Image (cartoon, rainbow, N blue to C red; front, side, top):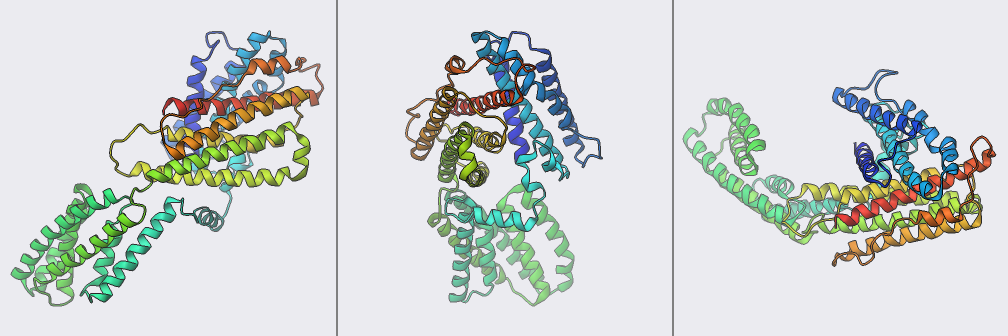
Amino acid sequence: MAHAAEAVRTLLNRLDALHTAAGSQHAYRPETTALLRAVGDAARETAAALRHGARPAPGEGPRAGPLQSELAPVRTHRALDTLGRLSADDRLTYLRRRSLVVQAADSAVVLVLATRLLLGDRDVDRDPAGHAFAYARAHAAELWWRRLIAHLTPRSVIFQNACRFALGLAAARAVAGLLDLQHGFWVLLATLTLTRTTSLETRSAVRQALLGTLIGAVVAGGLLAVVHNHGAVYAVLLPLVMLLAFTAGPLRGLAWAQGGFTLVVAVLFAQVAPVTWQLAPVRLEDVLAGSLIGLVCGLAAWPRGAAPEVRRNMAALCQAVADGIGRTTALVADRAGAAGGGCSDGAAGILALNRAMMLAQESLAQYQSEPRERTARQPDWPAVLVAGADARRGERLLPGRPGRIAPHEVGAWLRRAAESTAADYRALARHLRTGDGPPEVLPRPLDLGSLLAVAPPVPPAGAAPPARADSAALLVDSVIWLDALTADLARIHREM
């Protein structure tokens, strides 16, 4: 679902940029028009499949094949043929428009595959564009192990939550044993259910829980004093009280839930063994002890919740994106490096980028679920995740493409452009870590005019040797990839 959401967001952003790009009023070539129609068809098929909500039958549902067949002419030879016949200014406009169209189509392909996987089709990793779905056929044990290893760091909000709850339950068990509380498990239960990820939220939960428990204890004490040991009355009341408590609690809030649960516990215990009205204050005492323990743990262990971690993890993701840009460009511009240790370095780099993406996604998910005070405007965190996805897509696709960047001046331009973009991401990472004022360095768009000045003429596709066409396609797709990352960076800066 997160994969599909990333693809939708990227698709919408690219289409929006396409409508506002320079030269958008000019007519599109027939192959580009066909590709945009295929993107629309894929989006409609995906929407219909998601509304239906069931695994499509063989041959039905959204398909990536028709879209990929329309994408190929725009991406490679016929597009290069057109690019070679245009003037310098027209080539620049065409290249930017083509970049947005190809990125939109790539996102639509990922959206189709992610939707099919979401609905149960685990064969999507066999698709030529299924490089991002290696988890589709992985065993559950392998996925759990990867997840465990990735979160073994204090920077993980899941690790923080585990430590917070472990500390709280250990303290609750110790207090229940030292004070010899009559129903010590209530202390553990209160600690477990009332501890939240921020101290602000924990205080609010404790306040509501104590109020509800107090009211429930008063009602339960009165009920036990009046009914006393008439078991039949409790047997009749139990299902009614449970129905009321477990229905009203989720609808009306924590105070109702704790009050109703206190009443349920009193009626249930009265059927197990003779009890008196004194059970109610015992319940209140245990909940109070558990609430105080949860409050102390919330104040002592990461009291601000995911707010600091989302900035740190997003900064780490920006740093990973910058490293990925440098690594991918080196593998593309210098094919000799790929023949050595580049492949293993690239695999390690993708793993590092995946880990940074996972930690950033988890911290953002928790951050968005936490109530928080109104503070300064936050960056567009999902746009940072989109940048990470774009960097990952380039690391997986470009180093394995046929062709070679030539001549030397073009490779040098590509390295300079990559270094500039990577430096901008590192500057953004430093800003996110400190959080002081606006970023000092604003993103710089790619200087495609200087590329056209050093790039050799592109011969028509029919007259160019296959190796020459592959090299030209690799160059254009590398530029498209860098252009997408600079566009992501500009979008992040606009929201800061």
